[in-house]
Amino acid sequence: MTAVIAFVSAFVLMEGVSYGAHRWVMHSRRGMLWHASHHAPPAGRFERNDLFPLCFSVVGFSLFALAAAGALPGWVWWTAAGITTYGLAYMAVHELFIHRRVKAPLPRLRYLEWLRRSHAAHHTDGGEPYGMLLPVMSGERRRVGASEEPDVDADRLRRARQRDTRARL
Image 1 (tube, rainbow, N blue to C red):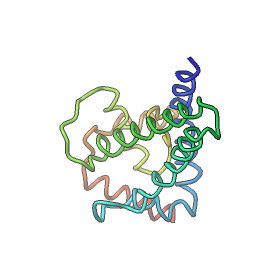
Image 2 (cartoon, one colour; image 1 turned 30 degrees about the vertical axis):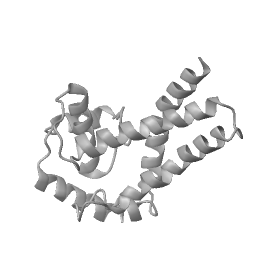
Image 3 (tube, rainbow, N blue to C red; image 1 turned 180 degrees about the horizontal axis):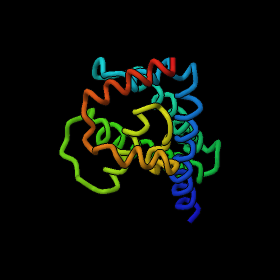
Image 4 (cartoon, rainbow, N blue to C red; image 1 turned 90 degrees about the horizontal axis):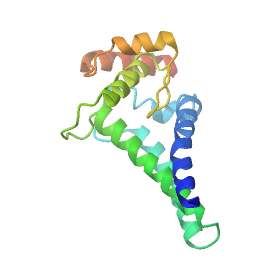
């Protein structure tokens, strides 16, 4: 039972960690050195922003290693599993479904369409929402996000990314 609680708690709490990292690290002056590549037109298969998940994965890997070595309690291994599972879900939703960085057939689910519209609202001006799997927005931002089409026009998105990048740098 402890393993289930550790796993689920870690997965759920990672949305708050994701929000905080996106809002106060990635959108900070220094964080935008990497994150601006995500708000700019794609310049290749990889972008500097891809370094963030690599850095964040060090935490999960370290927890796995320390728990497996017996240096930390066994429930920490399940916490690392919850963190890693959140990272995989984030990657699938953000990279596959929202930005379509890998071409694959995808389901058309209302939840995923809502995530895409919410993320399009963020890319419009770099503001809310900063979360990924539960992108909470104020009433005003919800109206902006609701007006966005699920399949964001590539030219409009590119112009929004350029405006956001200039505004943040």
